[in-house]
Length: 327
Ligand SMILES: NC(=O)c1ccc[n+]([C@@H]2O[C@H](COP(=O)([O-])OP(=O)(O)OC[C@H]3O[C@@H](n4cnc5c(N)ncnc54)[C@H](O)[C@@H]3O)[C@@H](O)[C@H]2O)c1
Image (cartoon, rainbow, N blue to C red; front, side, top):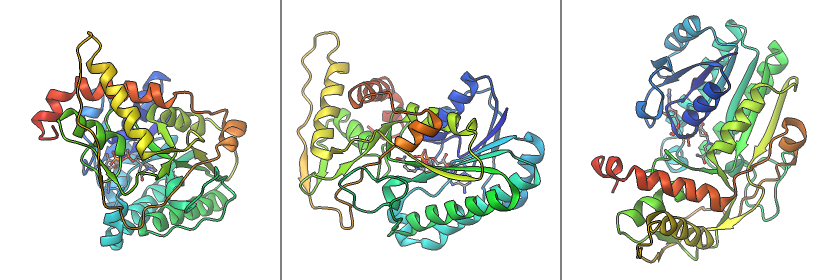
């Protein structure tokens, strides 16, 4: 299998690249490095610094790589930025996606896997939401992800390309950017390690479905190999909700275990509550039974274990993060 990962230098994309290499696939990456980093990628992976909005650039990459499968991760990922600049969001998330889909048709790609989002499609849900739930995006980012899924359905019907949308929950793990507005695990780890208190928005009773990045990467490989025909969407989450207060305690405990491994007493600053963030959903949880039944996928890394592995990564990358001003 020859896999092209767009956005492969990013947080989730780079873990997908690792899994492709483990599986023995040929894998190449296209990324404009707007948020991704070359250090996330093993040196041997062919890398093309190209903006997916540049159709000619994308075509040249396809002509060189000749992929049989594509995993499309490249995106404008910020919800608030999409609100401030919906045109830029659509340029990258809709036109960029179309460039990659068009090139995929031209180059006879067999399967196309798209990074969608469960968190922004189902609205406020207090019970796990299945894929059949009405889709009600409220931000331009959510609208562009839903539009992307609709385009995938069109390309699947029109050209017979196998198209799968993976609707992620809140993904966390090593290499997540602690500077982003989302990615609460990375933000809290970074603040605690730099001696600053984590800020919990409002009462902290905001429930999300946290899923470990390696589980997500594995779902992408199962999707590449799935036998499904046409277009199909799958929720990819833990299927369980955790609120920010509980998450903060679990992050603190994971860091304490890693930092205090040699018996040292570790004092980390206590959290502070800030104002609620306008527009934040109260609850978002995903029902992932379709992925279990059709892809054979379940999240296997518990929150405790995932946070421990993430804490170990943040602690071992302290010097690097400090040199970039993150700590
Ligand atoms: N992190 C999450 O919890 C989450 C949840 C739902 C969906 N997603 C989706 O998963 C995908 C990966 O997200 P991530 O969290 O790894 O973020 P990320 O910012 O680390 O990864 C995105 C990658 O795309 C690249 N990119 C951005 N614009 C590009 C462009 N115009 N041309 C080429 N490359 C471009 C970036 O440089 C980066 O490497 C995105 O599509 C995102 O919308 C993420």
